[in-house]
Image (cartoon, rainbow, N blue to C red; front, side):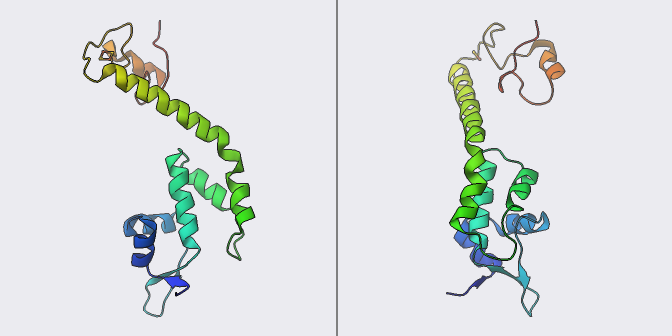
Length: 149
Ligand code: FES
């Protein structure tokens, strides 16, 4: 088994598209070496970093936040189990927030699918006069904001 992987090998092994890998590299989240041909070669431990990036994105971290977390890893050696464990130890509250958000979304979907009432007192889709815009961007009532009185 080679310790240096091509971008195609990393893509196949990680399940992340080559274009996304190049994007991660442009953002400084992963790094490659250049072979004599100029092609990217990734050290094998990059697979763990990519798994971390994918997981962190799924629990709602931004790429900037992920970059800040990854910067805590040692730059001169493959991270140990302890290094990874320290990194993820502060994530419990973030995961709890994400679970609560998903439960709110699930409750909203369950109410509205097949309903179509757009009832002003109970439907989170109803937004007469676009009053939700005063609360900020996005589906404000779905993400937990209350209707203005
Ligand atoms: S459409 Fe009826 S509750 Fe949302």
